[in-house]
Picture 1 (cartoon, one colour):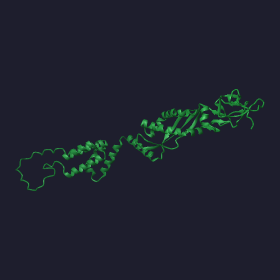
Picture 2 (cartoon, one colour):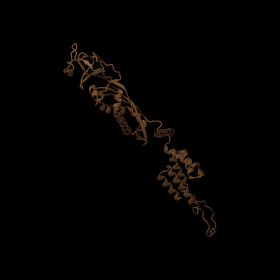
Picture 3 (cartoon, rainbow, N blue to C red):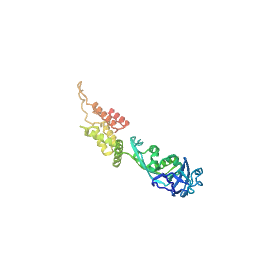
Picture 4 (tube, rainbow, N blue to C red):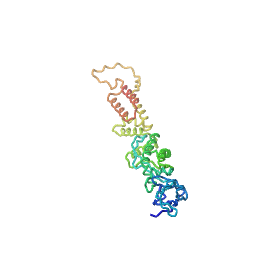
Length: 362
């Protein structure tokens, strides 16, 4: 093979490291290095350099490894065999990354397990070319950004998953709200990953998370988004989930046969105009209050002769001679409806106990 007189970069611009295809050099070979590059000669596993920007003539003066070269001079030239490696030190800002599978996280705000995916890009620059060649490139003919991305994929994904999970937990926010934390997350990940990459002579110029999202067709995501939409709707019209449930219970009760004349119907009549559950409790109290009001004294009547005593076994009016109080059947009905209101969450335990005492005392 002919001896090469001129060595220069002929690799693709997206390569981070490139090896000149021929190893047949001589002590008069010209080595051309661009300003954005560094070059190294490798002979017998020994790296010689770096050669910075400019034109370099390979000789025993600038290459200690050639001082022991034994060859037949050809016009003052001593042939030798060595590899020439170029390292591209231009910053590459378009290295893309993404989680290959979803990260299963429990939403700290709503307690639902949801799958999370993340995407972004980062920028790299070779900061220590010799370390980069020794630890990553090895004997490969070339090394590009995609290859580097593959090398670091495992480290990146593990760190990204951990940092996203920690950020969500620390902030106590929903997975659907994590987009507000992208800048802080990106900075934290850059700091963490820079330490790892520096071990291989690679600097992390920047690290950006473009999006953290969830699959729209996932059942858990649909459930969570539906609940949030419902909460927003209730917030707009001005009542809470508990009030909506109270309304549904009362509406159902009002539609039952005879509900209009029952205590439940009375509660709906009051609650619909005043404010759902709290007002319904007031309506219940008002509906039972009349059982406890003492009957007005009878109007004065002319003195009459004493009435004949009632025959033995004659029945008395329900609730006593004065007609006050309610019968046992009515008490049972009211207590049953009271239990239903408690089960529906409309009345609290203390309210139920208070109304129960009123009913029993009537």
